[in-house]
Image (cartoon, rainbow, N blue to C red):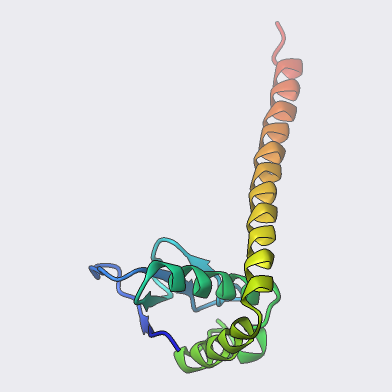
Length: 141
């Protein structure tokens, strides 16, 4: 298995290895991030390809709410580093069993994510258009 490490992130860390971040508090625990936030882990890998695999495994697990059974805490739920790492290691083995299907799934998932972002942007524009129509109606002179 390739090497990766999971550590608690500090905002001022300087990292040279390929890396990404994972939110560790709240109901979005496990969500991969490209920029750090106060409540996140940093996942460092030995190469960029393995980073991408881990990122998409984390993304898929987050989307399917696979981290929810591991959440602890009554007020602000959180996931522990050990639980996160254990689940990722289990899923790496699944990916190793069928890497071609995984890459196809990731390709489709990234296309769907891109479409979702476009739809959200279109919805924002529609909201602004509604606001402009109402504004122009009530502010006629």
